[in-house]
Image (cartoon, rainbow, N blue to C red; front, side, top):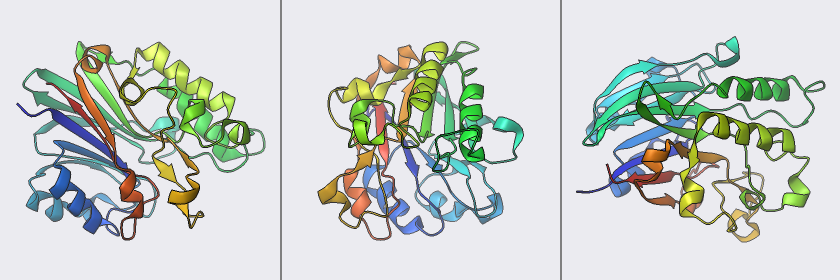
Length: 267
């Protein structure tokens, strides 16, 4: 039996980049794809394109021009819900249940606020919002009502020294500051989450999922960060087969600045 695969990708406008999304789905055929920053309202989501490729089940939580998350699946999605973190009305989260041959799993799809440029909550409202968002995420449990959970998405934090191109140079840069990385570790510890990307790729190895648009020679300079994550309940982590980070996608035509991550499980 083929592994059950879950992909996550900050697409930075699904309508603008539907072509490369279709190419990705044709080649890699994940069971489920979680998208962030879809940047469209629900009725503007290109549902027909996904259905043509066999992804008939959609959980879309969008808004005009900003943010937005969507989970598309070959398998039925049930109990779809979303949480309005920090009560700002932003569409940054959607949760679903999926029935697998090993039983149901829950799937969280997140787009955590980037946090602006100044890592000081007193001077930067966006950074304060990000920290508040992380505080609210500390309630999330890896097992809810006896159902093991998966949490994926653009979490906008690179927690390990090897998740950034230069730990020393980025210590005071939003996404790698101690207050953010410690907040992420606390979410994981309190919730009982396993970082399955770092289960597959040794923590001492550099691992990136994002390269800035501002870097014209992104591949050569390789100043990346690991901002996209896959966490699971321990019982699902024990069933991990492998993880792929599609670095080459950063060089596709009209790319996102993030690349897809695919986690495969023996379910």
